[in-house]
Length: 165
Image (cartoon, rainbow, N blue to C red; front, side, top):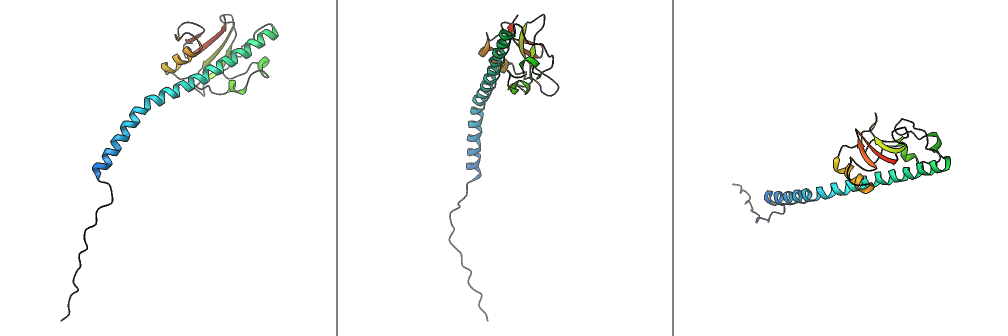
């Protein structure tokens, strides 16, 4: 008669993984941290966009103002968003032709209503942000913080920075 080998039981080893409850607690804590960080991240992002747009508007206003002084008149209105007026080709950076930090394109305005203004407007390829908090921050950085008064105003779908009325 053959003998069956004796089955040997090994002592139980402690488990080395995380329990489902531990994993759920970690995920919940991470979720809370992300929820607390998102508003701060949004504020930083809005501030960066507003600052970049503000700097661009100031730079362009200075360049157009210098052209006015040198040529005894404002450059001609192109009426096309992102198009640099011919008199300004060597004076403006190509940033004027690209999308703005808040969406949309830059537009030079010089007509009977407004002698000189730089606008940010929606065109076929780029839509200006409709985020009121962002637009008001641009206004606070450049002007009075009210989009209906001052040198920076929201006019329809455009943000207009008036250099001279």
